[in-house]
Length: 138
Image 1 (cartoon, rainbow, N blue to C red):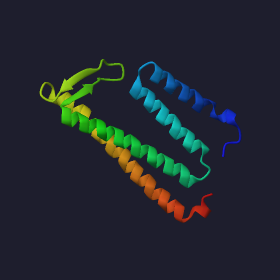
Image 2: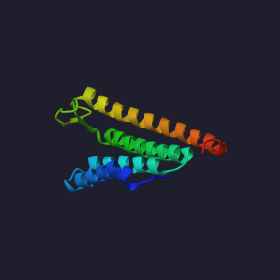
Image 3: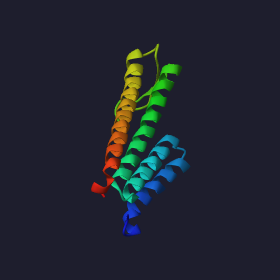
Image 4: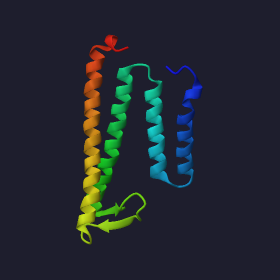
């Protein structure tokens, strides 16, 4: 458990930043920051190793689900948002107009979702294994 609340200052600042993003109209970044802050808070506050791994596995499962939804949405609508580099300008691309850029964005989202879902499965399996011998790891 946490000995003092002053250790949570960074997490609280992260949550305030996420709320600020939501108030500024940046919905997806705000939800991402709040989700990450909640995950860090759960990992910080949980006393057992099994609980920490479980919360990370649930977070990875949710992240993988979001990226899978975005990739499937690209496939169904035939449009994607392409952004070359971090500072690049966002451009909406279609499957017919620029198939290479569309496939790059969609494959990246499928890849990230697969990576997150595999990490989640590994976390759940490890959590289960640690739960069998939980007295040894406390």
